Image (cartoon, rainbow, N blue to C red; front, side, top):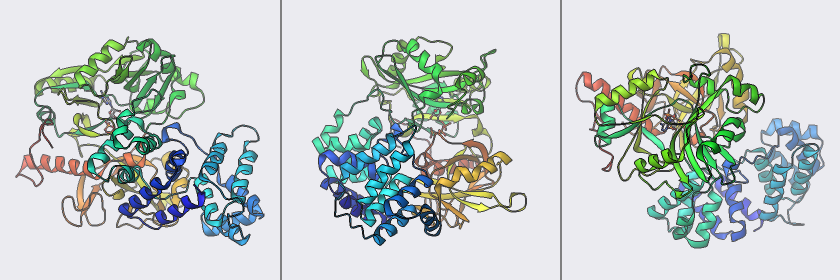
Length: 606
Ligand code: ATP
């Protein structure tokens, strides 16, 4: 396929913010792509070269991109940089320059497969001389591109493609292209994505054999599974009610969720909650997991926390978070911050995949698999049948340094539901007894200039929750409290990669920040309560027409959710649940409140 054809679809995608139109454009595109180029087109349209978990990055900074555009178009670097300042987008600058030079893209037209391979080369070139090599490849590609092709090549390498195509829209488009647009096919496609985390694999499987072929996408060691997620409940009595009176309660460790993949040759790969590979950060786990799990293959999940070397007590989250993203000083850090991984699930063992099995059986398989050691242990668990026993276990968990309990359903349907949040797992935390029942993870979509002591820096941030139904980020608060000096100073650099001149598409708010950001950075806030507001748009209309949720007295907890992508932020549906929990709590002191329905056991449809 000609790269020009792909770019035509991009132009159409950019011209709309409507998810239905995007779905139609994408499905038409996917059906027109030759099979051999389908996966590349899927990745490219997401601004990626490989599935996200592989972490393939182009390593092209603004200075390098500027040089490439200058060299490809025979301009001075300073002139391109100057123009970039004025226009704000290097892709647009490249298009201008290529148009001035009269490039038509017709002399030696670019193919998608060729462009893809060359871009992969840009990503894979590293070490000495790599900057020049990268520039060489880009100069080549741009030299052959038409202005509009050049625009998208440059935006792609700069990581500013921003077609607004989210994962959910891709799955919609797959269903439209190969599943007749039915709800069943959409569900099957999402399920295949949840176990493979690879849109390219899902698309090629669909193109080969339709929806029926998706069942052939099996769990594979080295390919992370999207995590199963938990719902919340207002108290332990609701937890038990939802689980038909009996539940397995586990300690809820406050650390980093880790999915460990052990290959039969003993190599281990570790993935974070957002499926980034974090193997290099925990060498001691790479060494100890094969000893604990025996001959592979195996895929297990657990929470990594820091433990005191002398007393074996569990340390606060802040300690383990210092091990995240660390590349240097690993030996010293291993001594300073000792980790233990508490395993709570198994997805695959040497006898095959276990995700279809009910939880009690998975727990038995996990217990049979694990040879416990100080570093690799099983999550503490107790089966409870009444609130008193649940409360006693909760208190023990808090006393042992955990943040609450995770309740797990024992029902026959309690399979591991990859990528889904449901009442098969319910989290109940200590904070549920004070202020708002839980913290909220918000995406930064804007910032306000500071005043007084904060003059010259950002004074407050505009946060949004995610609404997966609409594919939109909806604001719920402006937060300026809770940032210490170090956090304030760090803000500009942290947010700079996401800064844009105008309000990006897919953001709903009644506020006008001084600076807009595309959704990227997620942070945790707490607040006194959720109220309804005409200015904030989170879950707008869910409780009252025209009103969204607003968090009152928000405060940054100091926790950057680097383990969450923007689409993992708290959703509108979760805010509704929090809002109702709070209405209920007030209601217990007075009259019945609206939205106060009784808890429904999970065996039945909620
Ligand atoms: P979520 O993962 O639900 O989006 P979150 O990342 O903000 O939310 P929490 O609300 O604190 O995290 O609770 C869920 C997390 O608790 C899990 O993702 C997992 O990392 C952690 N966890 C700790 N102990 C357990 C356990 N025994 N079983 C399952 N998860 C556990």
